[in-house]
Image (cartoon, rainbow, N blue to C red; front, side, top):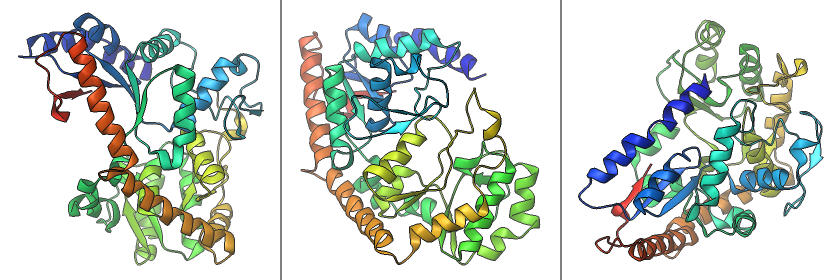
Length: 376
């Protein structure tokens, strides 16, 4: 089904070109998500500078690039472990846990479109900051021979930090609503969700329950309502929308539970590189087209969750070091977004670069204004 979705998205090239041609002036630049390579020929025909925006980590993008360049994907089985060659740090994974978004049978053309669009882009943009991914950003820029800017984490921008409603949507208790479930477990079997919930409850620690709008499974309803889980933990649980970048920006360590795509690399970044996370124990992605039998059912028990939380929140020196490091990273993230910070400086340089590039391509009436940048 997702292939049909992307085919439909690809068909937006015509309407986009028609829209841009009807504008009173051409955009200075178009910023397109990496999954929208169909914007490349449109920008090429109209002479508009184009940047590719990557929302996954630079760690993930570089790992996939190294594995592709060294031909690792072609010579290993799905679950066979390997060390990522040519990578700045030691990273062990498998095809199942380090794989590009279009590296699956049936979407070879789309994958090639993505690669071609990135190769012909005028630059690359990442929603991260150099304080945590500078090494990977520089290595990726060098590997592709592209100007690369880090302009995040956007969730740490002053407007979001000072926005009371934005913060309330992330951290204050919400009304009990059976239409919400754990966002990063919505693809897991209900049994896995129950194990996580019981492990959190058994830990007797305060926790944040990450949620999003989704269709609720009957077993999930039973867990939240009939079994009274939320009522029992309401004094020490917050229901919020929090991702990895946001957790770093808020200065808290993370209990990782990857389920798909780039999330296993995010786990490696948090746990192995930044030292601010603890693994729950998931080893195989749930949303995977070649899911082996051993991945079905429960991979992580409530006991595993309780143990991981104890490790994460305990009084041991390692736990204290994680909390200290998380707070330091949060400070770095906010500083990066402020005037004079690394991400603020990168954004300023980006605007200057594309404005000059636009002028060189004949758009003399373009201005050096952020509002003139078209974001897709």
